[in-house]
Image (spheres, rainbow, N blue to C red):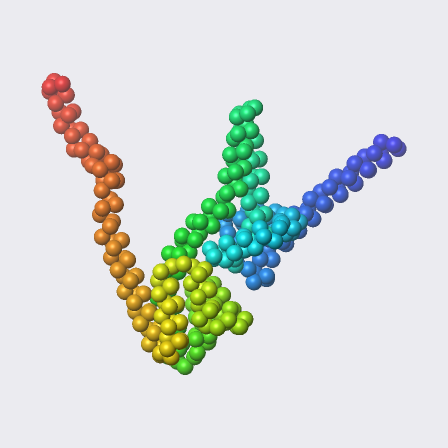
Amino acid sequence: MTQDIQYLIIAASVVLAVSAVVMLVLRLFIMTSDRGTDNMDPPPGIFMPVMGLVRLIALLGTSNFPDKWLAGAEEMLQKNGCSFMLTAEEYWAGRIVFALLFGGIALMSPSEGATATLVMGVAAAVGFMLPQFWIIDYKRRRGEELVRNLPLYLEYLTMCVDAGLNFSGALKQAVDKGPHGAMRNEFRVILRDINSGYSRADALNRFDDRVEISDISTFVRAVVQADKLGSSLKDTLYAQAQQRLNERFQRAEKLAMEAPVKLIVPLVIFIFPLTFIILLFPIVMKFMADGAF
């Protein structure tokens, strides 16, 4: 009888432990899958496998970080266009998760003693910096996307203003009808700033400060100047759209002209030696067969 009771207690403990694990997994799944209902975009790809753990640590840990740390992270995310994908708490939680993950993987290395400690420390440091490296790369790719899509959105704005809408209405139509991406998110932020009470010039200047791209700075200055002088907004937007299209074609021509120069190194290192080997191999074999070597 005593053994039966012990078996029953063990079985109940196992069931409770399994239930707790299942509930935890379900909770993490719910925390991950509700992204989109909180006006946030899907998280970055590198965060997706661990997003449940990231949000759990953000909820229980990093949300209690000093306000200075969180404000600095939030400003950095906004400046790099990541504020729609990550919160400041999730950013810090992600750095902690990747540091622990990389450090844990390093523990499996066969090294021992001081070498193992060094490897684990380096791996944890790399994991801790990985989100920052991703943000730097994302900023570069986002800048290229903004420059590429700017002419298209300027044409949207021109058509909407020409149809009789004001600047805010044109922005709303561009956000609703334009392709998804960085420019759409930035126009959505501009529209939000205007609806929050910022003037059109202030909202555009905040946009310029966030992206720090020369093409967008030129567009912002032109629109702000037209607003101050009372010039035709339609003509200004049309001129900016044409200028941005011409610049895009010029950049494409420049890249096409640079392609032959960039091909020289691969040609010299890889293609030319292989070509010479293919051409000279039959000749060398012929000389060897004739006893010349």
